[in-house]
Length: 307
Image (cartoon, rainbow, N blue to C red):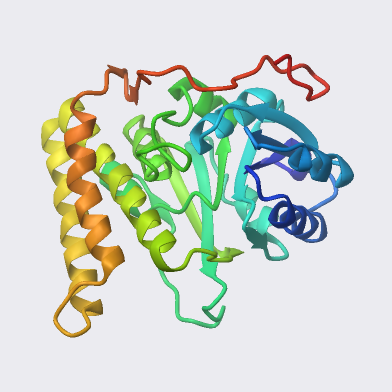
């Protein structure tokens, strides 16, 4: 089983220095001192992200805009065999690293995930989900991008996260589900440990919250569209599973006989994402960007870019 000295915690951040400072402080107080912490600056507009990282004794790298692009820079920059991802708006609970590492109980386990708890939800809220995931379709339930650990060599072998998907891109979601599915299709196992908890601060309200859900929908639609092209029957299963769950959630949450604006935005985004995914080139199981990501620098060992 890997140890804390085998682990790099990667936090990707863009223009949220205050949140990043809180996240790094929480990581410092809840994690073994042997871990390495790497901040990947996803093309922030100021130097604040770098300053916060250096003040908190974290390693620093800079990437182009986009969460998947930043994560991939983190994967290639880190040198330790286990990489752990959490978000700059999340605060991990004590023992989170130990819980994640304990999940790597065999060589077949390629990833371990934990529980993301919204700041409005009590930790005592009943919570139960399977511990082990082996079937590709179960990647839809295997975890959340806010708290996930991987064997770095597996991510490198699979080509990392899909650059076209995730926050910061138009198809602004489902990149975490996509990598889970790809890992499971490669024959590996994912473990989920609900005792590993990070608390997420939801900062979006009003139209920003609706826009967030539209982006999630676009990402989910792209996920469906990708797998319809790569493995049609599997893609149909992914589509039906997501659609059935979305409609069931909308039915439960309806007020006055109407779906909420964010639910309508999500469903609309799904169908738009499916349509848009048809035109994006594929290389293996990843989309190929039709653009060159802005600001992708050559990184030196000291974390300074050559831009």
